[in-house]
Amino acid sequence: MDKHALDRFFNPKAIALIADATREHAWLKPLREALLHGGFAGPVHEVLIGGDQDASGGKAAFAAEAVDLAVAKLEPAQAKIAFQLLEQMRCRSLVMLGQAVDERAAQSIHQEALSRGIKVLGPNTLGMQRPSLGLNASILGPIANPGSIAFLAQSGSLATAVLDWAQQGRLGFSLIACLGSYPGVGLEAMLDFLSNDTKTKSVVVHLEGIQSARAFMSSLRALASTKPVIVLKSGRQQDAKRAAQTHCQAMVGRDEIFEVALRRAGAVRVHSMTALFSAAQCLANHLRATGNRLAVLTNGGGVGVLAADRIAHCKLELGRLSDQQAHALKEKLDPQADVSHLLDLSEQADAGHYQAALEAIAQQQAI
Image (cartoon, rainbow, N blue to C red; front, side, top):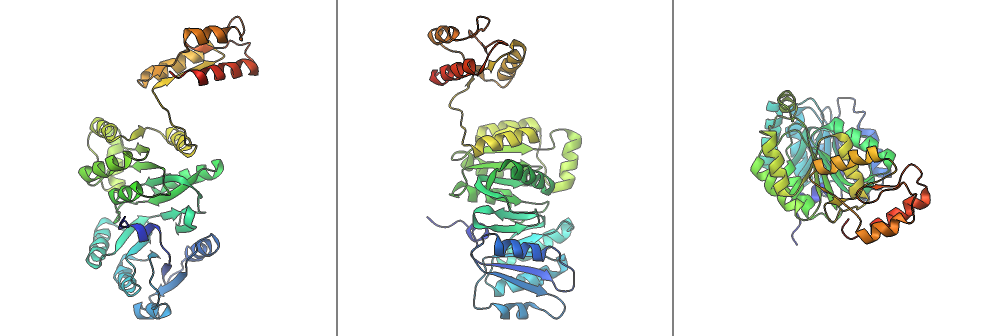
């Protein structure tokens, strides 16, 4: 199988860190140390441009060795020099860190990159991580634990929040990428890459807007046909949509249309960070529902009814035991227990009662 166009971007064997020699660059040392001591197996080169350094001087340091990925934090005016340096290194992939580039400057950077055949993540991105490779090409903080979930976010603050939560819960990722407000490497290309990425078993996506609905839905449909995809989209209300458009310079139309399109593509939409975390945890544990029937096991009728209402609201079905199984289970429970619909074990339920009920549920194929 031919390698994807982003293979060297997300599976680099050699990296260059590019910084402005005339400025303080507090990001550079932590990133270099994270790569050198975090498990990245390939060489990590450091290049300063500006001042007494220039592109030809940068080339002399390692002209004999090609670089797969460069990570830079530069002023927009220095982008052309950086691209010249990348060409000398035979590098076609760049993560351009930073958060203060306007739309006009970003377009100029992308046009220059396109003319040279260079793929750019950014500007205005916090970068990306590939934990299984020990690759931390970001300013997101410590590298995440390795796992099988890919997380793509248009919001750097949301990505940081997810990383903080994941570290506490020991959740692992195959890829974390912040697209930023003016992405060169777009969401569609990343979804295409993940379709055949063996390190990724499921994908979580945060959206504020999309540039091309047709391209996005095509890539999403192809990915969702092979791997579970969870989507959290902000900007459901009009005021929120305007805020999202200002933030990411992209727009999705009516939310109802987007909801239907996601469903047809095979993706699952969530509407809150809590639901996103829960979905990610389920994906990490490889928990897959095989049908649409959910049993409710409770020791209180009131909360059980609330759960049943929620099941109906989600257009799922309440799972029930067969008459034979319900009768057999009833004999093992407190006399006040009722297992005809909900599995209400009563307030007198103990661990043995719960064990018996769970065993009965496990044997019921209709649940």
